[in-house]
Image (cartoon, rainbow, N blue to C red; front, side):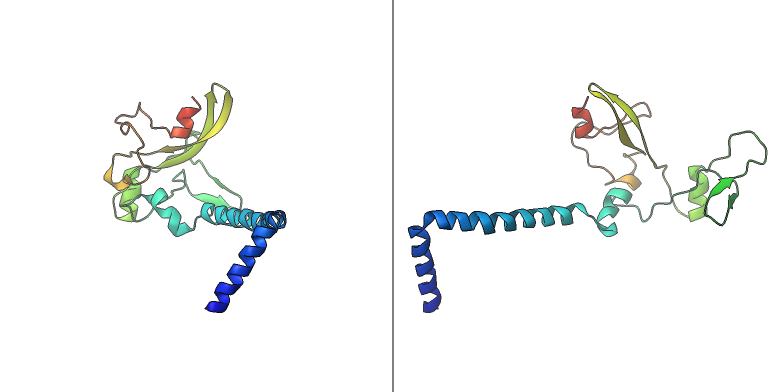
Length: 169
């Protein structure tokens, strides 16, 4: 242990004598290490695993999310992977799955959950925004989004927005 203290004392004395060289070494070695460490840490904290994403996708109560195809009609798929639905009664509007039908198929309780994006107009122009359409007051959706301030929407005519979207107007 005394050899270690002696080495520290000698290096400290040398650093005090040659301050310019010490500063140069700190900038040439310390700064790149700090920048690379910060970038790698940022990269790893923004890449979430599927397990880490589950609370924001399912909430804290739900066991699974069921994504149903838009239509209940049979799907024709070619060998290349392209598919399309046939409309047997030629009405132009294919029948859609209801929440009750999906709940009956899975043997549990289900709430409607629509996730899509659209264009929004702001004071500084327009931009594409992501939308989530669901009942956040339902206990099954608890934990999907965290309420920052105010209250959750109580009717279909009300919406909740993120603070970032609110700041944009």
